[in-house]
Structure formats: C-alpha cells, structure tokens
Length: 193
Length: 193
Image 1: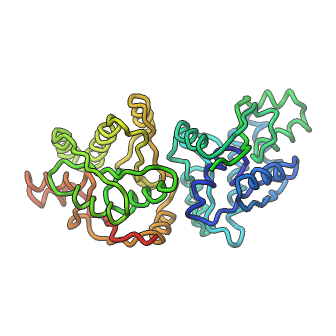
Image 2: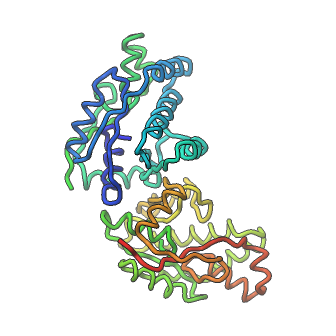
Image 3: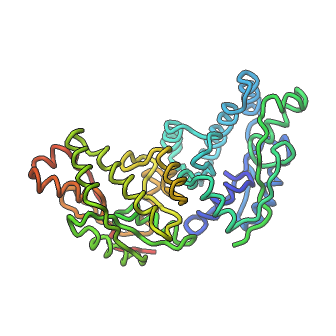
C-alpha cells in the first residue's frame, strides 16, 4: 500500500531483499494521486500500479466524516475497503501496510486483520508496526531524501488527499480546515541507497 | 535479543541488510543456554555474545510465578530487566526483539517501551510485531531449517528454560508441569539462504 510518503517507501526498501515487491496506490480518480505516486515509485525503483476504488466508498466516507466531524473513522473505512479490494485481486499473496507503532490512522483492528486474512487467504503484514518514530526517521535518513510540507498543499497518494478534495468541491475550503487538523506530510524525492 | 528459536533468528535475517547485527542471549548461568544459543548464532553467521543477568532477577521472578501460579508476569519481569540491562550497555543503539503480532509473552507495554527509549537513549524495535504466524512461518521456511519439540525437553536461550530449571531444583518436576503449560518450542538447525 503505497502513498509516496516516507513510511510506505521505507516499507518497500525493507522488504526488497525478501519479497517481489509491487507498489500499489489506491485512487478514486478525483485527483491525479496515482500519477504522483507513480513518479515516486519510479524514483525508488519498484514496479507500481494504481488500484481504482469505487466512488461509492468515497461517498460513504464523506457521510462518515460529515457525521463525525473528524476524519479518523472515514479514513479507516476507506482503508479497510482498499485492503479488501486489493486482497481480492488474483495473484496478491501478501499485503504490506506502512503503519508505524505510534500511528492511529489508518489502522485495521486485530479482528479486521484476522477476518481479511481468513476470508481472502492472504497475509497482511505491517513491517513498521514495531518501529517507533525515531527508528523510522533514522532509516529514512539513511535511504531516502524526503520533502516535508503542510498537508493542505501536498498531493499525495493517500486517502486523505482525495477525501479533502471532494469536501472542497462540495462544501468549500473552510470545511476542510474545520474537519482536518493540519499536519506535516512527507513525499519522497530521491532514494539514496 | 536472541534465544536460538525461529522468531529471533528470522529477525536477525530481516535486519541483516540494514544493520550491523549482534545476537545477544541473556543467561543467569543456571544452564548452558548461552552455549546452545552461540552454536545457533554461528550456524546463522552472526556475531554473538552472552549477557549475564543478575541472579536476583531470577529469584524475584521465582517469587512472582510462585505467587501467580502462571508464568506470564514472571517472564515479562525478566524480559523488562534484560532489555534495561542491555540498553545500559555502551555502544548499544538499537535493541531488536523477536515478538510477533500474536505473542502475548514476553511483551513490554507501550509505556515501558517509551520509558526505556527515553531513559537509555536507545531505539527498541520489534520487526515481527506486524507479522502474523502464517507470514512468519512462510519466511522461516524460506530461510531456515528448524527443529520443533515440547518445551520440557529443549534447552533454549530463553528465560523460560532457566526459570523452569530453578523451579525443578527447588520444588521438583511436578511443580513445573503445574506452573507451565507445555507448548511447542523451536530451535534453528540450519540457515538455508
């Protein structure tokens, strides 16, 4: 599951010696997030493809965030649907996710993970789940050059980018800052080793 | 943290391309667990050393298990002390632990991990924390030949082996089977790749 950010890029690098890695970016085709992620994947030197997700998932996520007033459940809803969609693809045996020890979103619960593994016969792994922020940053520094910026002016291959855009289209910019806390996003620029 | 079992062996292999790995086996010198683990480490092709732990830790663990009637808290107590002892060693920057997604023992709590990282200025990582049993078994099969057996007739470089022995010495064999559920242990025999 590849957003073009530092965590999912690092996962690809850590798995490279052991697996045949293909980077997958999910998109609702609201913004060219697939193309942005594809350029990052080329820079890293991995195969890449865009997985188109059904717009209804984004519409449902929009209802969830409008109802909640914060993005957590909406993002988790998209993530669960994205993992299930990918898990149903022929040829997919293992799905790797970039979640870190301290991440709270997007995250699947233990029972969601077990259910997905059982229903689809795949393995779901989170190679950074046992790494804290400092350990991730150290490895990122060794292997990647990254660019960091505010989440509101960075197109990334994550769910938030397109969810924000659809909110902007429907309700305007002020609704975005009402629903999303600004936070620092990363985008990889270059692979060092 | 290396016991000579499949999980800690796999951790070493997964980290090898990215870190300068040294395998550490903790021992109270009750049984030759350090020597057993050293042979496994040689088979894997990694540097290895034995970290002697203070007997008072084992005595305290004995009190805990005698009081509880089950091993979980005693094993976790030894583990926390072992990690702290290793973290205080000059030159140790990162400690890697073989715990898997489904493991419940030995495990540090989130706040114990954060406290150890802050107090000792080290990073504590669990590379298999985001891997389930099936994913671990798949990787083990690709990289290792292992031997499995009942926990009661296998000397391993884990805390349980010496805790069982001291209980045997003080209270006899029947007390061991009263306190410890038997479970399958693994020991690595050979590295394949």
